[in-house]
Image 1 (tube, rainbow, N blue to C red):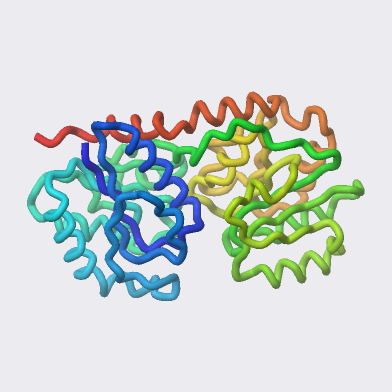
Image 2 (tube, rainbow, N blue to C red):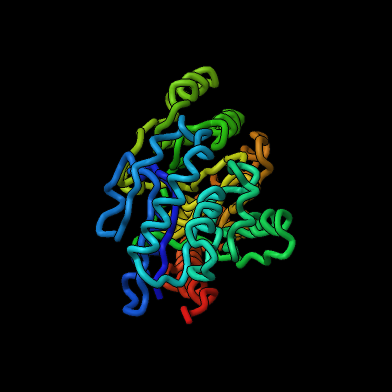
Length: 355
């Protein structure tokens, strides 16, 4: 079976890159499967590409050009038309951007293969040209919330829910620290990630001795550092910046924190839980509800509610049993549910053979 993943220019440091590379590595382990990555722009950081089979058309240049996508539609069509001819018979295109789904249909012309599957990684309401999702023949959804949103846009679509795969299955459990230690790993882009809610929630705690580690960087780092100072958290927050080995940066943590207003399917939750770490996350659109079993492997709180975050954080002052599941069980359940080979099998089962 031959598949191409078609996507826009990616930074090289996000969750989508993690999911794509994990899935492609699982495909490379199968002698009957070939997966290529077709990019519409060169990533800032190409290290994640590694030995992945890629084709790159240097069209997209960065986020500030996002709203110039539609004028480039003919260029996308031409690139996909050329690559389809070069690649030979293919079973499917898994496409992450609505406008690229439209480009793929135009490039395919009247042919019925390859089938075009939508495989979006954010809620449709957050995507440009969302109406072009209808150009896809079939749909994958990386969370139940995204499946519901696609179904609302295209009532006859019946999306197949296929969660993103783990990038790896760590053997070691993340250490439990001697004092309550909270961890944030991700971009410091507050419009989505709402690190301000995390800081405000921790400022409500009257228990001394906790620590927060922030691993990541982004456009709002300076503003968030200033907020932490204003809240009197200077000595309790450590800013590590972006790290290529985020999980090796901090010696241990009580839980991972994710206070986003929206997500697609937050890979950082999977990566933390694969190391046995419980989490506090907002019950935002979309993703955390598919990963967290409240009280068992973490806690869900309403988006934007720093008081609810503080209440959930109090559970982690109990070092022995902050959640019902042990760290070993959290790890084992996460690895079982989100194993890359298992996820890939589910995706490939939905793709018919080329006749």
